[in-house]
Length: 419
Image (tube, rainbow, N blue to C red; front, side, top):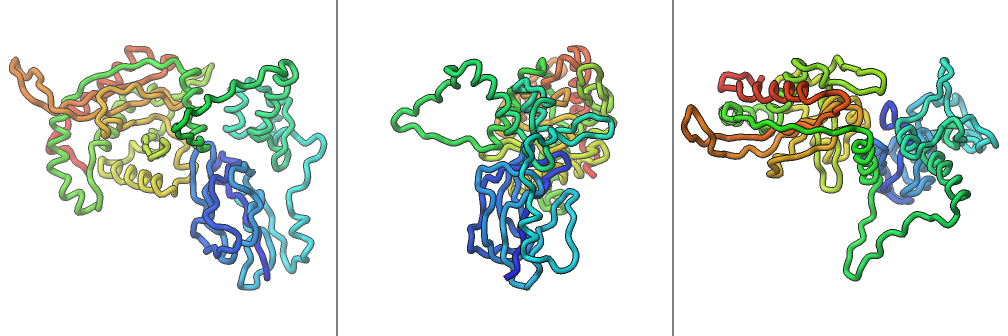
């Protein structure tokens, strides 16, 4: 029977490798084109990978837990339609033979064994080496000079494993007795939960954020009376037209967008010697799943209405829960909005996503007694909490941004259009 070789897809523009977290089929099972075949974790997303063809899974070449370069073979599928034995299409620059392919050719097409001194990484025309963001992040954390690392990936590309092994060698030679501290021994009855790759990457990203970004924090209290009234007046028609609920999140997103327009330096990235002020407002939205947290991005959010923002969030959250997000859905964010208040929190000191200048958190809307024209009244109030990069913003600029967002929310009325 004819066979085809399944390769690791490239799950995003800047993603060059992935770790197989789970095979959804086993040898002997039938696989159906476009239906999920395995789950893959990258440094940006956990995603299901569909089968490229229909047939019987003959062999698994890359096991669970193995990190594989994009374009490398991971499985063999036996076809039932008599197609020639050719590798499944690779996402980046892999050619395909024409005409009849003799049986030895698939083996010859496999990635060649590394030479004794492979090139450390692809080199651009300028002479600058190009490394994946994951490799650069690990190198920064381990203080490794990538120019001295030998790559074992496809075409001599440096992988995270190469960097980790390079960093470990001198430590072992200099201090052979200084092994890493042994993990805590579980007591009787304790449950041991192995960290997933995504959980480990989140941990690495949080440590990177807190150790490289000088966090500062401010909060203001917003009167949400107009927002509550507007949502109440529109939610029934919105539900009927859109098929899902209108929440408070798109209102806060719209407030953040308005504040970013008025204070463009908040929509920026600190780059050691310069500040990059972004033209587009690409809002990251924190989505909490059962065992992880991801931040998909609404691109050019400033071009959307409240209803448009709601649609975008509903789409991203739905695809996040069904593991249908792609790595590019999580890339390119310039600012983040967090909705901790949906779980009842009142104050949050959120961690900034590296590469951004801040994160705005909306808290729970709670009816509280407040002073109204010299009298006590009950109003729906909400705290807006703003964590910001003190390298980018001082307290004055941060307060102006936060005030802009609060004033936008407090200006919402029954007449404010949703569409």
